[in-house]
Every structure is written in structure tokens, then in C-alpha cells.
Image (cartoon, rainbow, N blue to C red; front, side, top):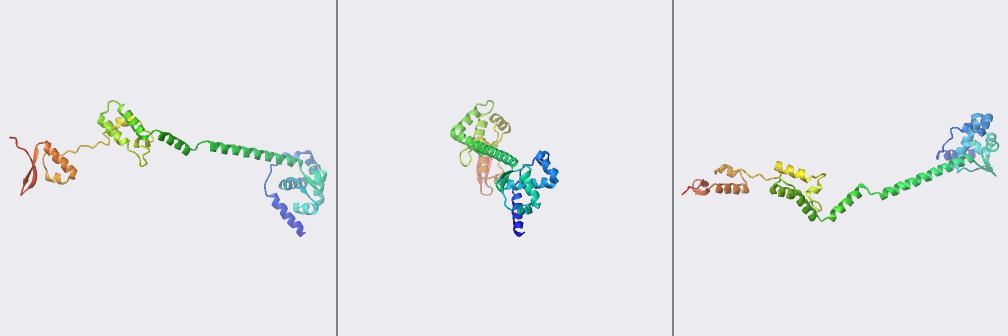
Length: 265
């Protein structure tokens, strides 16, 4: 009894390893109808328990002790032997038996598995053959590198100066701003934009006075307080502005240096 129990555990372990398709119309098979007519759905259940067991054993089961097998399947040993030998449901070879019907099922499963494996292999090979997005970017970058950056900047400059109705000053300022290179020196500022329409950008640049350094407006007379608020460059420009207006510096021990307009002779 103990030996039979361990065989039962072995059978149960085998039965839960995998699954196979069950023919939904199997109950109408003439052989199974004969089986059901004698043993009812008990015999029907024993038959499919044997099929499940055969599937886990590569469709071949060799049995010498049917009492133990019956214990494992929880059925009557005489009914079990009758189902195996007398309903033409299994092929008998000595003390072994297998199912022709299950053979067809296994072959179909293997065929589908092989086809699925081949399709997966094709998809894998196709995926390796197709360039990824990063590969595409690398290809584009390599193509870009083939054109020397100096040449690309020169071409950019020609495109700018080909546009009419824009002052040369605006064109030059625009060119200097948009041709600043990145740290690696492989691209200039305009190339790093997602989109860049030279014509539209240049016209917008010109109309808005973008990036133009506005000339500082200084007083047309000398103001010591205003002068003190300027930085060194601003002070220099302020004094140059006064000179252009005819001012000159005058030193006084009490007032210090000041600026006044020259008297006309």
C-alpha cells in the first residue's frame, strides 16, 4: 500500500507538468460512446486520465502492476485493464501501450512549436538587421561629420547673405550669433535647433532687433551723480559723448574735475 501511495504521488506530479488540447467533440467518438455505454462517465474520466498520464510520459507507458496504476488513478484495476485492452483506444506493444490519437496531438503541438520558433527567429534576425533609432542618429551624425564644420558654416553664411531686404549689419550679427559652436566643436548653434528656417529667423531677427546691443543714451551735459553710477566702460563712453558735443574737462581745487562746453573763440 505504501509503495502504491508513492507511485500515486509520482503520477500526480507528472500530470501537472503541462497541458494539451482536448477535443470538444471527443464524447461523440464511436469508441468512447461504447466506453460510456458500459462504464458511463467514470470510464470516460479514466480514459482521459490515462491520456494525460501518457502525454507526460511521451505517449508510452509500460505497466506490469495494474493494481498500483489503478491506485494512482483512484479507480478499479479491472475496469482500468478493460479500458486499455478492449475498446481499441490504445495501441498495445507487449506490456506497453500508447495512444494513436495522442500521437497526432503531440505532432501538431511540435509542428506549431517549431513554426513559432522559426517565426521568432526570423523576427529576431529582422530586428538585428534593421537599424535602431540610435543607429539612425549615428548614421546621420556620420554623414554630417563628413561635411567639415567650416564648410557648413560657410554654406550657412551664403544662405544668409542670399536673403534680400536685410541690412548687412543684421546679417552679420545673425551669423555670428547662430554659428557659435558647441563644446565638442562638431555643431554650431543653428544645427542644434529642432527646426531652423533661415529666412523666417533672419527676418524676425531684423524686425525685432534681437541680440543687438543698444547704444547707451547719455546726458548731453555733465552730471557728476550720473557719472558715478556708471561702470568704467560707461564712464568712458559718457566722456566720449561729451567730447563729441564739444565738452572739455576742467579741474578746480574746490569742485574737482568737471566738464564744461568749450567757449567759441
